Image 1 (tube, rainbow, N blue to C red):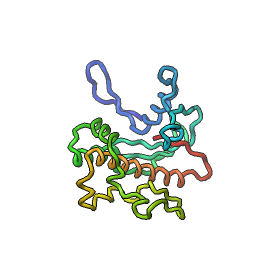
Image 2 (image 1 turned 90 degrees about the horizontal axis):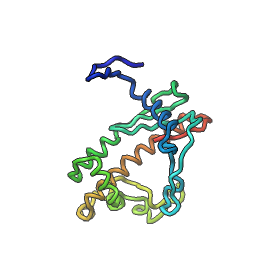
Image 3 (image 1 turned 120 degrees about the vertical axis):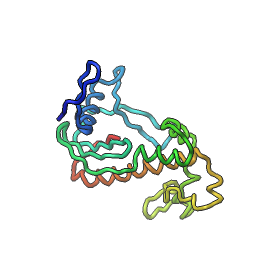
Image 4 (image 1 turned 45 degrees about the horizontal axis):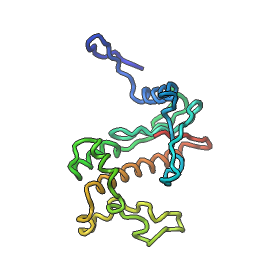
Length: 202
């Protein structure tokens, strides 16, 4: 569905539905590729810096898929075909939240600056981890010691607040937002799957 919009110069602008365009745009970008390579990819062994590698993903027959659209906020879509999808849920904690909090916490002025700071920070100085509470892994429930138990949990301590850098705060903010999005997406997938294999696009 589209509506005629204003004319600027010699161009007639059309207003289109954002989420329709999102789905069709992803499929189009994948179909044309770039320099013969797919623009849809995934990371194999993402937690291992030595074995981690970026690999192309084939989107020739992607349905059903769960599409996690991260913008200022987040929309999560269950897509069954290019014309059949529904918005399952979303969250107001998205890219805009990350940037806004980074501006408050670090004084940065651009999104790129916030990401650069986050790339150099250490979130474990800001967040309270499972090992900080249990001394290691919580094996009974399969929780590794490095998992975040409380985002920004170490900031209750004056001593620890004084020891963190702006980069650490930016990194912890990024981890907080992405962990939240990932958790919601996983719950949506479990609720929607009903015996079907879902592909996840973020």
